[in-house]
Amino acid sequence: MSLDFGLKAVHVLITGAAGGIGLETVHTFHQLGARVTAHYNSNIGELTHLEGVVSIQADVRNEESVDRLLQQAAEQNGGPVSVLVVNHGIWPSNDAHIADMDLSQWQNTLAVNLTGPFLLCRAYLRALRNADHGVKDTASIIFIGSTAGKFGEANHGDYAASKSALMYGLTPTLKNEIVAIAPFGRVNCIDPGWVATPMAEETLKDKAFVERALATTPLQKVASPVDIARQIAVMASPVLSGHVNGMNIMVDGGMEGRLLFPPKAQ
Image (cartoon, rainbow, N blue to C red; front, side, top):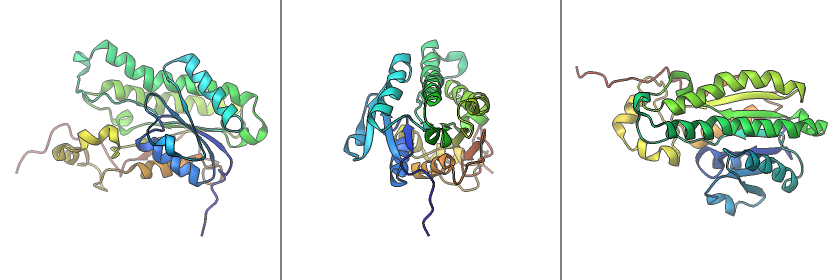
């Protein structure tokens, strides 16, 4: 039995689409018949080989660059964006307590992970004001949060703070604001735990680290990008999730938190 997600010909913009969760999300929406615009920053990667997908470069930290991204997406892919998937983000790999973190690291992480989503949502909502009813009827913003935004993450307070702001600041705020522009518009957040992406590849090579990270996860496995991409598609679907709004959907295998220290030997 085939299931119609109601996303055929719907214009979906996915940020950070060149790798990991983003690339898998591009494939998923393309398979569902959506018109996909894929954003990348410095490396286009495999996007260059995808037929039927419009790829556009932009620096999400820059106001003019983000405004241009939304304009070019509309011009090159058949009209205004209806579904915005805010997937991009950085996770500095160096461990740094807040007491030792450089201000430049803090500022750059928040610029990419928080100011970028603000600029994207603002440009998207402004364009949505002038869109036709068909675009507004399927309007949806989907943020990609993190278990770090729920539980915090020692040595990565910049990342945790930025994700928490998306999950518990912007999501509930925008779900109340979007309806003033699109009466059926929705805003939700998909919050993964550890996912086997290129960004996490080196960290996940440490078996002891993975054991600690999964110590409170009943499913005892690291997610794959397709696990997250499919949940994003379900949340974007006006057929499957048309009455789901302002929610944080944890896609983390049932994680209850992280152990600060490995268990003592018996």
